[in-house]
Image (cartoon, rainbow, N blue to C red):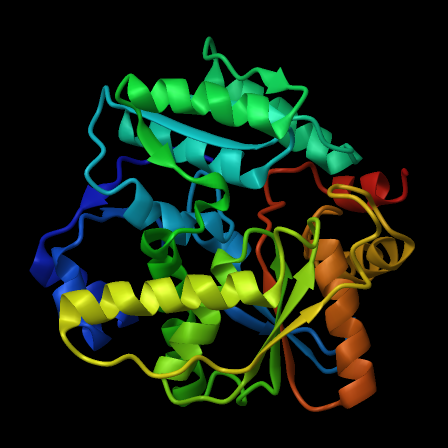
Length: 343
């Protein structure tokens, strides 16, 4: 996949490109760099996964898709060639990979600091790609989370633009609010029936928070189900609600209008598997079922969320939408299934 130079939009162009900015034109005053290609497709994969639809967030952009592209459009707004950008994450973090990739696309210098995690085979592939994307850059893996944050703080004090872990700040969440509004428009256009539930991996919470707020603004009552893939202290409903409240205040401050309440949120804990990055038997089964529809998923995030989505679809019937946040298109064909069997 070939990188392209991102577009920096005028307000007029921005107004026409995103449902978020059509709904809240005042937000066009925010700096934004256009990295993604939207809307992302919806697919009904009933043959392999009965009752399930998929939102293909793996197709948000080139040279790399995934849910983080939406947040980075706002978090990297105003970054210029030659600027430095710093972030933190686990050794095989897709957030770190996306930040490095798109900082490079812009022409900025990424400074990333990581901590150790339990590595599954695909997480190792992500970690290897981070190293390749950095080239001669420096991406040390600290023994502790505190060590990684300390190094990032030093980079910030020296003038680097800070991109928080997971991109989960009110500014980054705006990209996910746009995703919720985009889905609402696709439903209104008849591309899928209104889902009873949207199932998303739950890490730092920005994606779940933004979708819930966006669907609420659109007037839908679809529930958002976050499937926890990190320790409970990070991923919990109270944290999601704080992110929603902070993002709503940002919108209200800039638009001078009230923001609708988010849709209901539920957090599912029992697909976690005991450690970030640890593959699970249920996730392996979900990986193999998804592969029959040509969809590549990862053991850290998507496999656990898809296992939960399958379980919910079978238990509660109705319409379930799985939010595919991982871009596995860059992996060799068949690689995900083969790797998913290794534990």
